[in-house]
Image (cartoon, rainbow, N blue to C red; front, side, top):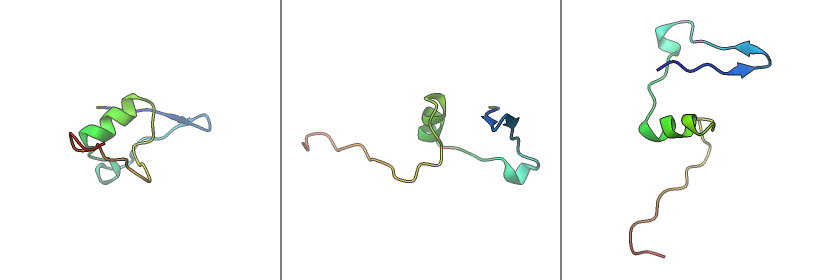
Amino acid sequence: MCYKRFTNGKLQWPRTPAEAKVISQRQYEWLMEGLNIDQKKVISDAPPGIY
């Protein structure tokens, strides 16, 4: 998957394979929702039946 984002009018691409990231399914979902994939805090899903 390729991801492009304008930051200050510029596109940032990984320069080397080491700069490319492997992302989780959750990070992919965040990316598709327009969120930052490097979340500082993650709110975990509650186990079923605990409310």
